[in-house]
Image (cartoon, rainbow, N blue to C red; front, side, top):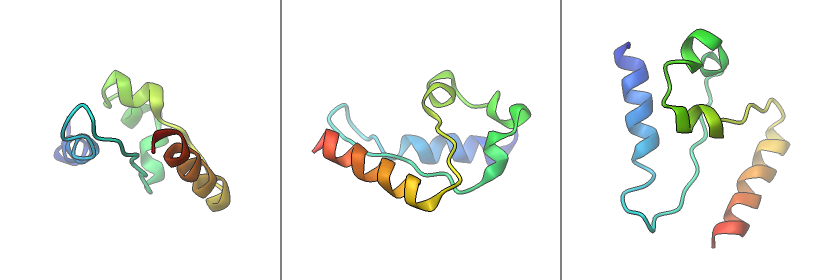
Length: 70
């Protein structure tokens, strides 16, 4: 596994410091959608990863997340 992938996984984990923390991670690098890269991510990230190309759709998903978790 490359250092860049390890750093990405660590950064995603920083969102949740405790069981009660809520947050979402937005990865603005399309390389994560490549099968050879995606397979290196932990299972939970692979399951939860949503790929979007429309910035408005992305903003809507983030707003929806916060409405559900606040």
